Length: 211
Ligand SMILES: Nc1ncnc2c1ncn2[C@@H]1O[C@H](COP(=O)(O)OP(=O)(O)OP(=O)(O)O)[C@@H](O)[C@H]1O
Image (cartoon, rainbow, N blue to C red; front, side, top):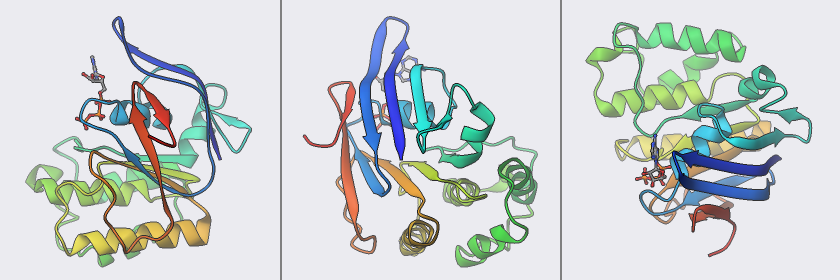
């Protein structure tokens, strides 16, 4: 359960997003909103990547503001358009994230094999296509034992073969670990392969469960 409390994000004088009190119960959520509505702002803030007023509290006691390290170990995030230092290889990034997230040994192997990434994962990320970078960002977001995984525009740049694999990862992680997912998109959800998806809307500079 994620409790968003007295949330306010301003860019200069512009109030991009305000969420007074919102509880996200365990589940898989499709966070929908038009371009510029504030989806990335919400996910980055909840991931602890950008500063905001208010707090995000996991499981009623792990506060992003009070226990930032513990919170960030439990809340994983993949950017819409991931950027990594060019000179690092996928393997090095996986090692870095595995250490930070305390991932069990060999946890990445399943993801790398199922998304057919083993042939290039040892290469520098400067040689990756946008889809290859996206897959790497998705693998990194599953490392450790996250209570919550935030995926910003997870479907963009993924090829048709990779989509059902990602849906399998999400469904298995949710069923086996109880991980909550927030998946943002400007489109309606159309992935029948993923059951029990609930809708959330970022509209009118706030987060709501109904239009
Ligand atoms: N760093 C920033 N500085 C100033 N304004 C920003 C910044 N980042 C976002 N904004 C503004 O905040 C609002 C929300 O942006 P955000 O990127 O969160 O939207 P989004 O819903 O993710 O959009 P998209 O679907 O196009 O990715 C927009 O009006 C945007 O112009």
